[in-house]
Image 1: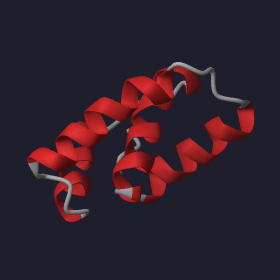
Image 2 (image 1 turned 60 degrees about the vertical axis):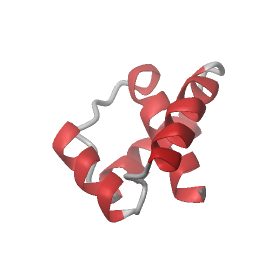
Image 3 (image 1 turned 90 degrees about the vertical axis):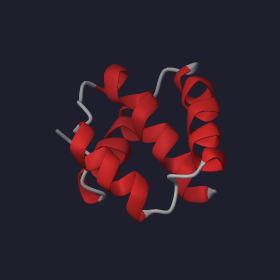
Length: 75
């Protein structure tokens, strides 16, 4: 579930950090990471809004953008 939590953070930080998620890349990563189950979907969906509540710092944006790029979901 660590992958799901990290993915939720990458998704939540996209808008406030000024980057976009590549939907095709997201789909590939979601399946490859083994998250394409009802449990994985529920976990990511429940945690993305929680992650979005706090404004990310510049460092968090840098790390989120870097992670999005490394997992192939940065547009």
